[in-house]
Length: 274
Ligand code: AG3
Image (cartoon, rainbow, N blue to C red; front, side, top):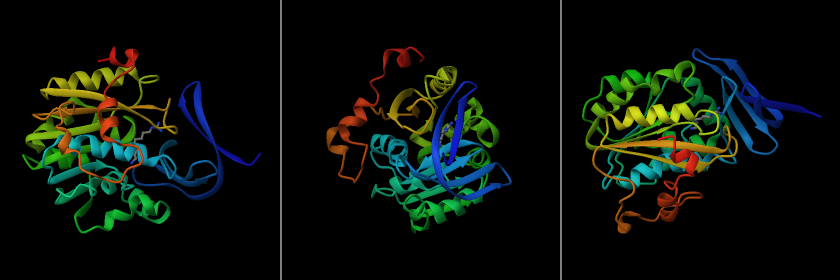
């Protein structure tokens, strides 16, 4: 008994969690936002009915979005996070001492506000002096930036609602322009069980723009199918050819130098998508 939340991940399949408390349930300017306490995964942010992050498993996604491209670049100084208003990617970015400035462009200020309140260990570093937070449209920010960033991370929601245009080829062209000549970007690209075409399409679009395109995975239990993918587009540096000495010590719970390389070893049916 009690209250249970279900994300219907497809028409016929979902994930269900017991909810102890609902802190917030409101329609923002952009989306439906729920912040709840779950019994199994701690506090959880839900946008438009989809699980975005939980206190228990957030580290996997945030570490893998941040550290893979940041270690691939020899000297990342200026970093942009598109979306990611919960602050988890920013927290990981700041673990790299070479990063002088990290800009977060999140379209929905409410995500930032409630994350600070209910997910403090995820959002806490948004106050860091190396971070600039802009409540703005990431698509427009990219369209108006040229040759400025070393690394760009796209921490979006799913390709429905406000994030739909963040999965289009024109957006990746903009990213390429916004990056410096040896820049790298990464985007979360959903899962191979329920959205295989998305992985195929994004990989094709990115590889038409970037000379080096790679797909890697991580295990995230609260996301659809648990097997999550990330697509990297890079102008010069290959994430599979990192000199061992580039991996400096950082505190992590998922990422390791060995896992960095292993994450690119794809199950056959996933590799067949690209
Ligand atoms: N952004 C990607 C979440 C996608 C989850 N999809 C779903 N539940 N259907 C996560 C934001 C974390 N900073």
